[in-house]
Image 1 (cartoon, rainbow, N blue to C red):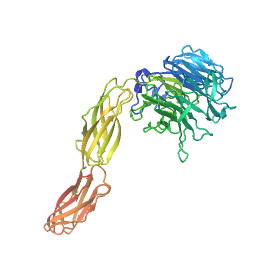
Image 2 (cartoon, one colour):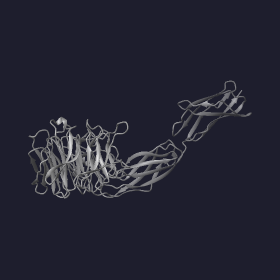
Image 3 (cartoon, helix red, strand yellow):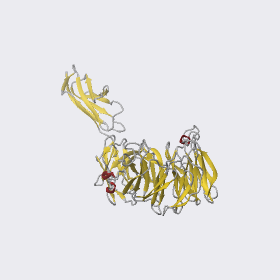
Image 4 (cartoon, one colour):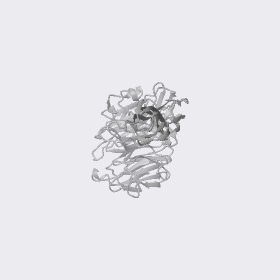
Length: 576
């Protein structure tokens, strides 16, 4: 396993010591910080279909899909919140959907020919009413006190992608059609207040899949908001891998393999005013889940190498706190997060994530404990800069200090800086805070006048953002200079030959400087032909003076918006 292509475990540098030896690494990314604990369990499956988390009894249920043959047995592995497998429920046929009742007393299981109900305390079978035959794998959700489930029958597995899927329920102990159906896989996800979401998987028979919100409180489900996603040009179709509903029911997040993580308003399924940042380059969205307390969202992905496979971040998309970024890579981790493979405990204290290897025939359960405590961060209000006189086009350093409560972060905190001048606000990037709390913002101001630097600390999942601090610097013009080398004596017949050098500090001139040349002698002052400075800054002046005795040559440059003017003189004794 490696992170950022470095061999060995990086728990000591990126995670808290509790992570050492677990096989999970956190990506070396800006402000990525540690989970307080991580446990990994290798699942006894070669296929996977569903995950359900019972926060009342602290049990995790995982189903082995094993679809494809009526002779395939099914298994449900049962784990504690500490990652210990305590039981395995064996079924006569494949299992492919799990859902818990509202009180977590019953686990509903989608099997090939029935919907079984198990007691979550004893794991005993309570009931198993028949259901329409399913060959492709069910989705199960509970709303209004009863299970809704999908049924899809085909002759061959290859037909599952486009075969018609019906949505059924159980009434008085027997199955009943709801009347809702469509082609291909239909994903079901529960929400608060007896609602659930149905999303269609992209397939050849559904080039523009739908997403719909249902009220499941009555005898039959009633559809509310619905949406398809292609634009007028036919682009933008939904490629759904997972659905999550926020605990308050106001937002729906989608893991869209084409568009990343979409965030929608539940009421009309319009795009939320603020969305989540893009997944890292090379990562394809595969799962999404809100924490039960509504504070965090987990975004799973399929990625390779050191690209993060899992981001854990504030659920509020306007909160710019840097996410935890996890990389799963290798024989102890799996290589990517599976679709529908992420769920939280009700209190948000644990995140359960299923990963698989590249071949998709081995599976791991990761139990992650994100930090539950955040500590205050303070940016010192006294900032300094050097050099004392800032100059346009030259390096400038702005220095400050940061303090934080609680333990030292496993990965150094970072500050973000901007410069505001007459041309607007400019992002200067992020800068690492040293162990002693000091940081240095590096810049090269481009305009003369006041430049205000704003420094902020976004914090991370263990440190709150700090109040911004500002520092205003007066930026002056850069210096220019002219040096002349002239003979002490020259004659009127041979003329005067002067060489010189022009330099301008700061920002490079847009074109070569043109210098004004004046000659002052006994007859007065006159202007000679101007000279253009060569690329290396040198120039020459050749003149035939008109009179004897002291003759002074003055060379000047008027300056520009970013550079001071400069002048130099040389006096030559002219003889006949």
